[in-house]
Image (tube, rainbow, N blue to C red; front, side):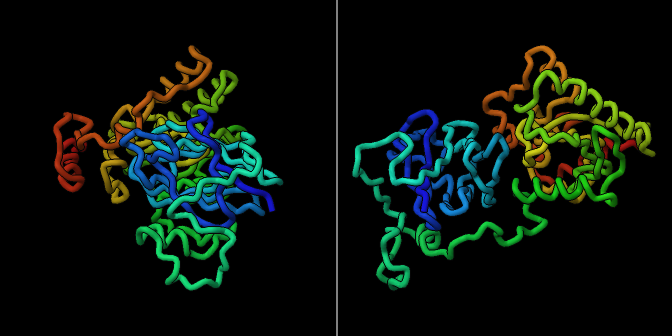
Length: 343
């Protein structure tokens, strides 16, 4: 069986071996040499499937862990394969996963050296039938991680209410192909209604060509983005409320789905799906980048850059996007927004 190694891309520490089907947690610690206070001591839970060649990554910490620039989300789980990159927190501390046929780590440590045992890591040589009472972990969370049943590739389906990166990404691909979900399509793009609309009118314009994220955009994509904007503008023009409601077209700086998609959203934000501060700030702060600005950046710089600390914008107070008056809660904000709706 191949051995699995969790490799620090910036060489902060030696590779960490991940035993087959056994969970361990990583985060801010002397082992990883991560000192950033925004990284939890238990930021991620990792579980390797050495036979299938990937690991499960579950975000435990509050601040975002991401895989290929797609945020995992607290409590959510995605897979990490060779060739993909994980950032431990806030787009910092990059890692990759490596599977070797022999026991040596990717950086070839001293022959015969063994990975450091961690207090919440089970000994892979122990008998699986050994009584759990004799293997008390240092905390209830670590115990659950150490003795939970091995995961298989097809994990238990996630509830449609859970906005996990993996679930949304898969659902998006299905929706793109579903004629019942499509409201417009041509040879370049398809338009679908957002499954969790944050306003009365909320569409997604998606290219048929798979582009993982804004950071994957290249100058040759400029014409495609312009076409996506034209299609979005057309959706607004055809909308019955297009003359009375204001609309914005743009992209989330750090999207929760791994396929580039343009949001076309009315600015009433009158929707039961708008439930928390993250939802609000993702559309009313600089976390939401105007379509024209993305195109201009791509034409000017040949790439789209996301500013450091962008994820922190989701934690800002609730400010009305019209008058900027601060509101204490989402219900109070929604009541306030009604005062700005056209009569």
